[in-house]
Length: 38
Image (cartoon, rainbow, N blue to C red; front, side, top):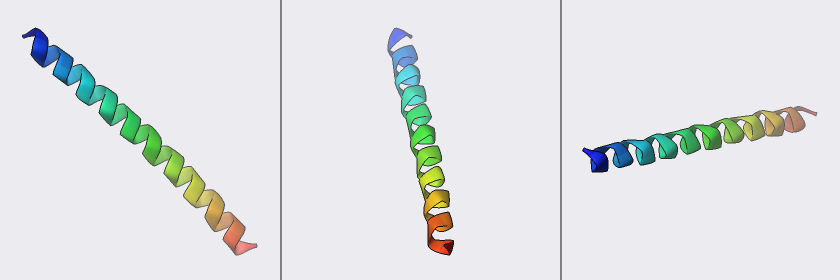
């Protein structure tokens, strides 16, 4: 049971990190698009 909890926590951490990276990439993409328009 404990191993499953640890695995779930690790997966949640990975997911949260992936979401953070995606948000950062989207922000950079928007900024690049704005620069490209100028």
